Amino acid sequence: MENRGEKLLELIRHGLAQKSARTSEQVLGDRSKYVGMSDIGSYLTCQRMAVLNRLYPEQKGNSLSKLLTLNRGHWFEDGIASILKELNITHIRQFEIGIEHEEGFEVKAHLDFVLVSIHPKPTVRILEVKSCRELPEVLYPSYEMQVYGQVGLLARHWDGSDFSLTDEHGKFQFGGMTFPEAVQHLWGIDFPDDVTFVDIEAWVLCLSMTDAKVFGPYKADEDMLELAFDTGADLWLKTSQIQEGSLDISAVQPTLGFKGICESCEWSSDCPKFAGESHPELE
Image (cartoon, rainbow, N blue to C red; front, side):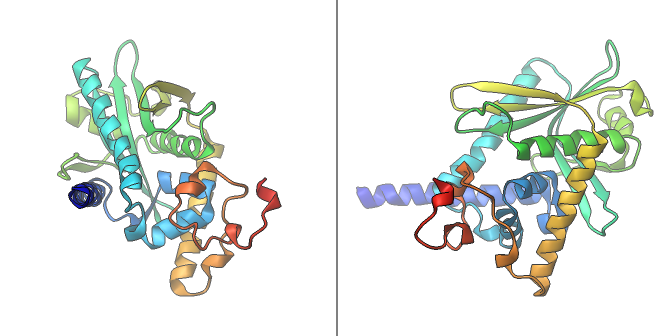
């Protein structure tokens, strides 16, 4: 019986891994070809982890525990989508903004939810959903960087042909549209071409298994957007240098101190932070 139970757990693990890989490929595409806002947030948390995640994506999150944690976020998103649908709130899921960075790589943001309204004035709300074991007292810097990048890209490229949509089944809906064109295409709603006439905010909804907490609002900030771009450029450069052989992963800085993410990090076994037997700096 014990062996059969283990086989059942392995079947669940395999199915989750297969579904995660398929969903990521369908909705997010080939993540090695661009830097995402979540990559940039991850790089702020730990440079070494973010670089290794990009270099070896097939080794990321294959344990049942990690897969359940990752998929819980998708399940929460589906739940929030059903709530918005029940309330007849106009929204877009996984709306993509993609631009070419001046350093020669593409930056993309995938917005969990974009809510739009024309009354009493043109309004856009970005809603980023995060699954948390425990709700944070203050929002993690990596999450803040991600959402600042999202709202900053939306505001700066509002009238650029940088918006596209692929549905949750991987079916391409449209691309090469401005934001007003996308809204007109989806719902026949007229939005101004000038972003200054639109009320734009981003919010982060953190969900645990028993509670929820909201952080925001976050508004477009040019300095934060440029910081996101600089961080993404450094991530892209270090990853490229390691692939070319001009940089070794040992030269990439791990996170300082001990963070909760370290206990579930796939790359901790040979992390220089844990080399040796004595660590007074981590007391």
